[in-house]
Image 1 (cartoon, rainbow, N blue to C red):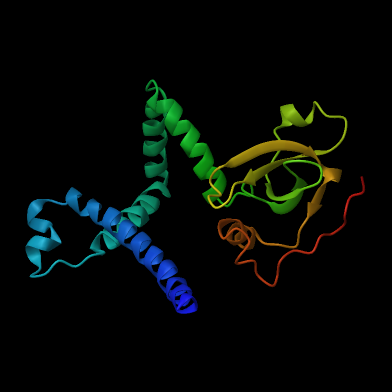
Image 2: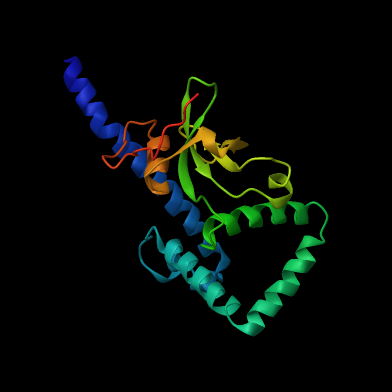
Length: 205
């Protein structure tokens, strides 16, 4: 009886959570349809409600925005609008912080997570997965030896974590992609893949 119950849970728990997340995403995307005039709303044009049409509208808006910003006129117009937004008290501070994070992760300019490392955390006898980022010049000039900036994500939510500067010799570089590391962290190591990392060299105490 117990093994059948566990088997059933192993089937329905991931399936249920997946469906719940999809429903949440689709429902959120469908809210963008409220931006359309009432006489253009799909529910008024179609005999039945079709969930997910908001995803098409969202993708269309995002692609159109990218197309407009990529030309000279659109870029200048956006730069002027952005400068005005940055001067709005409180709003400018929030926007600037969010923009810096999104530019780092999505721009593909090489400033996002560069390597997957092992670092000693939370104590000398333990190792944690970490992502190498960049060290600001002002900080790097303060050190007599090479340090690296690392972000140590928490499990199972990798969007939270800790940011440290550690000596490069105290880290182990892994042959692991960022995607694999993120999956390992989110799954708490349960979904570690066969291509899990091999360290280049172990540091000695």
